[in-house]
Amino acid sequence: MVNASEVRDYLRKDRMPTVWCPGCGNGIVLSSILRAIKEADLRKKEVAVISGIGCSSRATGYIDFNTLHTLHGRAIAFATGVKMVNPSLKVMVLTGDGDALAIGGNHFIHACRRNIDLTVIVFNNRIYGMTGGEFSPTTPEDDFSTTSVYGNIDPPFDVVKLAIASGATYVARSTAYHHPLTVQYIKEGILHKGISIIDVITPCPTYYGRYNQSPKPIDMLFYLRDHAVMNTKAKTMSEEELRDKFIIGRFVNIEKEEYTERYAKIIERVSKVKV
Image (cartoon, rainbow, N blue to C red; front, side, top):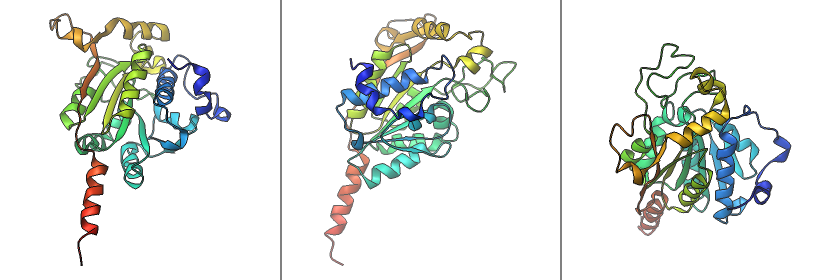
């Protein structure tokens, strides 16, 4: 695996230290992303990274690529525009569970439907961490937050199931604890031709952990270790055995014509029509 010294050139060192809380998993996820880019052997000018609003979306301020820090929920929309203008770029979206699936939900499902060549990494901490600890679209039922002090009654979105149902052609899930696996899936997503969704479950000790009796970051990482089940193993387990577990792994990896390539064919065909 690529070591830390090999990705330091990808960082804007004058922006350090980050604003992330001690123990936040976002630094681990960002490290996974940078290592994946390095393993994919991409030059900085070949990569564009787009983010919306939220703790995870601050990541674009710390990395030295073509970057855009955009509006809440609109990262995929901006990324779609970048990819349409310059299809040769490897375009990545760094987004949170609230940014991607609440206000940005329609952009998420339609990008999957179109199969446009974006690599979307969802920093899934299951809470709104930046705005005060409100429950998000992925907060588990009965868990606590500043807006569900008696327990959350909203059933959560499953990022993987939503992506698959919307037509994504590469879908995977990992955690901040499973760092090598996260690097592998992000690298595969970058090299995949089409929409790639990588759901990365990551700890937020400040809000999610503190409100749910797990304020120590190390305990939250151990929770990810102990409650993650590979999808290949999950197939052999009963519903009871899978209770309180979440399934990680690669779920979809299929080839399908990519959106900007289809669009280019239309332009070519129309340009040959005599007016």
